[in-house]
Length: 430
Image (cartoon, rainbow, N blue to C red; front, side):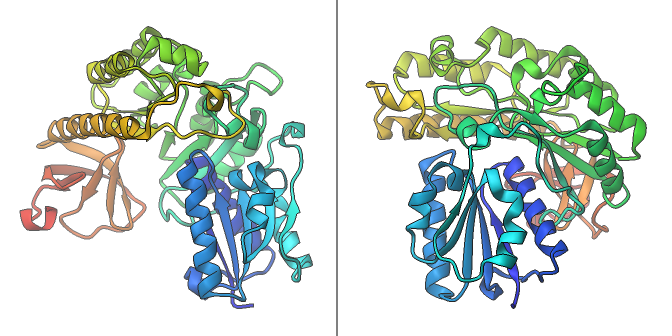
């Protein structure tokens, strides 16, 4: 066997799953291929948040099978959980393994070399415990390991397929998280905590523990130099959590809170658990506590029934808040979700036009934030090709530095999408 290659699509939690799959395959004695074209076992860890993600997976399978007809292709992840028969019918697919059985892939590979289109899937809602292989290394991101500590979601947003493919909210045991962070801290400067619904960590565990309690324990019981929290739902950004992020020098000043829409009526139809005024309160609280923090959000355009007036309400709301970056998504109908059955679907042309408007707004806000950093000295972790500031800005370095170090960097100016260190020639920053 020449080796395996794991390719992951989608969110941070999915990226963490991919890293765990790589670790599991390596622990089984298999060799990693440097490139996907060198592998005779390809594991595709999928996303299914949008139809575009589904299309990308199908195209990837066909491309691999055409170029490497003898390669065994395992498709796992969220798309595999949602539509296993659909994937199994694609020429070249050897196994389809849902999220329910993802941890069994190393054993499956060892035991079943001659199957084609075999499906391994179970009822994801039957899973009560958090199941994930420990993350030993940063793998794809060589300096910022991504540790998934929560899986699933017990919310029922009308547009979202994730609960159907990830199951109910489940939390990693706190002792396990502490042990893993302690191990990672011995090798890496920054550790990112992620989850499908990270702010719900601990709600399913005994003792009434919360995410803020876990973060305090990690600060007390490990030597990790910097923790970063990935996306946390707005109403889970409690005062206590925001104040801890603001006051601890070992937590990145970075607040990401999914918004989806700034229109009250649209949020109600989405079955979101907050209103614009609640959301604004959390964001303004974060900015008051941390004037230079990164503030990010996910925003959707073209949700079924979204009128011109409702979109304008959402746009104006976004403009009114101190966001430093946005992830703007065009609504994509997902089979099995209530929003699919709404008669008043927004034409795709209008959805895309609204997406363009919000992305332009996001670029302006990001530019203003980056400009405010010029002449400042900011803390960053060095990565393979530069640095990433604690407030989530890419930095081009004026001189080489060893990766995986936290350093203070004087900022001299802007690059196309980030900053550059003082002393760097402008031509290098363009």
